[in-house]
Length: 105
Image: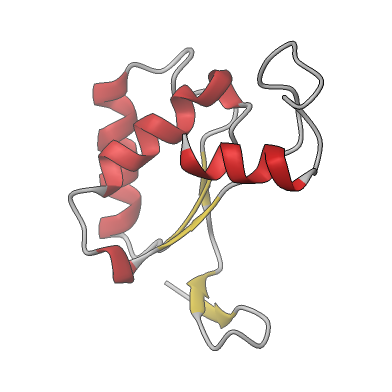
């Protein structure tokens, strides 16, 4: 696996990332999603991507449970916020309130 520096952070991430868009928490069963995450990790992928809006948070939950099997400092987990997670006026966007809520749920 090839790795590259991530900006000035000093971290090295795999040039290939495993994402969970439109799959985990939706059309792919958790057991299969876990096998996929584990297979990627075993091949040297250490960069995993998800977002709160993917399957309304279920993708993040699936990825989190799958990655629990590995030491936390051995991978980089990227997620995103912005898109609506509810119908309220503060349930979307990049306000501090929405970002903190997404990080703590």
